[in-house]
Amino acid sequence: MLTGVDVKARLAEGMAAEFEHDLLADGLPAQEIEKQVIRSKKRIQAAPALIMLCMDTSEMNSYPDDKRREAERMMAVQSVAAAGQQLLLAAHAEGLGGVWVCSPLFAPQAVRAALNLDESLEPQGMYFIGYAAAAPDARERKPLQAILIER
Image 1 (cartoon, helix red, strand yellow):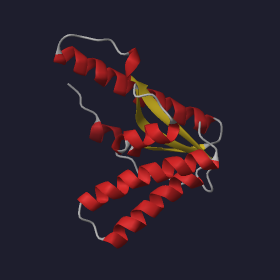
Image 2 (cartoon, rainbow, N blue to C red; image 1 turned 180 degrees about the vertical axis):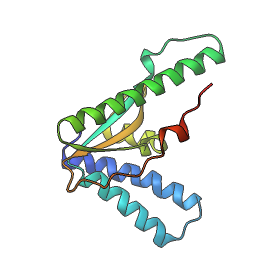
Image 3 (cartoon, rainbow, N blue to C red; image 1 turned 90 degrees about the vertical axis):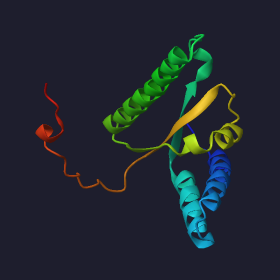
Image 4 (cartoon, one colour; image 1 turned 60 degrees about the vertical axis):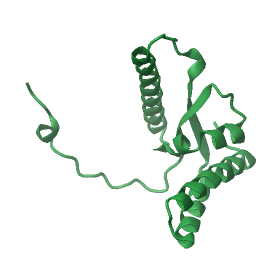
């Protein structure tokens, strides 16, 4: 869990540099890039707590063929995602709000450098955790029958 001002600033700066590089490559106007980069940095620095979920590739099984290597990697990614969902549910049960963003997938080296992580740790998701200023309005959901596939 990241709560220190310095570590959040390092993370925000490192990720912002990668983000700016990508936006420049996309050909966005300089003003739009600056706006998006500032917003990204503020989100990271303003969060009371950040949790960076990483996939530990050193714990994965090794296979000689591409098919099973890819399946092993997919299982690891799914496991991290399931753990992240449980994290959000646990935060909610404690009266906390949480937001899951996948921006670390676009800047893994910057995240590793900012947090001094081993190369075997692949950043997968970042979670902003804190007390919500207000409860959001519930979104309208599709009826179950509209998304259920029966055979």
